[in-house]
Image (tube, rainbow, N blue to C red; front, side, top):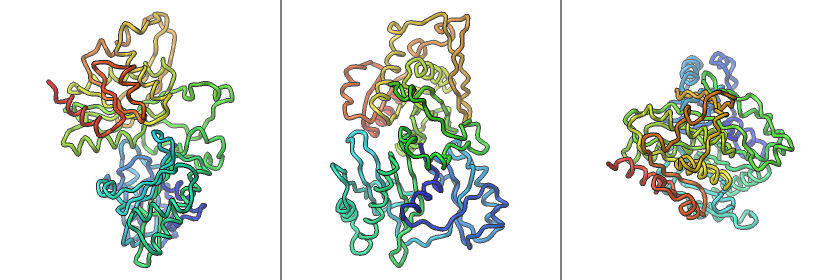
Length: 438
């Protein structure tokens, strides 16, 4: 579960990580009562990345300009998402910008702390200077200082950044987070530090332990969007929690970027994963066709099979597509579920169809739409209403799973139409190569 920036900064403030004075704005006219002195920065509060380059961040020096900028931001779609609120924040004169992050690495099964001397929007420069330290056993302040030393920091700046890393790790463990980032961490002329932007992902399975996080209400419906989301969180019953299949519903969302001439479609289980694929493909001078997100992953075979069939049927509208690039990050159970679903749909003889049951679906691949699978009793058979992928025009699959045991999938789910990998860069290179094949 991803928090918005202003929600992440509430947690930063609680743990003692320095943040700027700010206010959330739900309507442009509220800026007339803004308590923060100008100049200020207005930031679109969306969960997807790339808002700065998309025009979702504006620097303003007076109320008139602020209201005009806020109207623009509220009506700006960023990867299909409109902001419910805007964050108005004091301006900060940063002489240097750093990057700090902690992530639960599913391959290593360890937390990893990251740092880069070059934070901000230049991702290539950030990655080029990225340093990491794996938390093998217990975290200690020494590990934070090791990272800052690897980053090239020294003196008071090393000590100050190390202290922020310690606070980030405390927040990471006490709130059961999957990810926490500060990008950028601003450094002013006096050496003072300020978290200028923040990202937090909370483990869905830990929400019961943290009612304070539920009160942040991170699933508010996006303003002006066709995406229908619940305004409050619902939890599984004890009986449901004991089930081996933790998710019971799959939601499909088409991001509002499409290219009729693109040959590669992207399917991911997170907006950022889809955006990352899109950006890398574009960097390699190729054009993706579309990007699709499975917001809530279902381990139930019947639901997942139906959604994959529906996605492929809808992809026929984009005639040039040759490859479906799948980028999934999750548990081994999720990896196996997607592997079995794709492999089963490519093997027409291996799946029996019950003619007494059909699945009624209401999914429209329009900008920002989100469909949900519904089951109903009908007179027609699924075989007539939904063709298998194998019955449709040929398509190659490049499937990237975050697992150290990719050889298992390459052997157990070997198929001439599937390429398995746990390296995203290699997977994208293979997808581009397949898309160019005659």
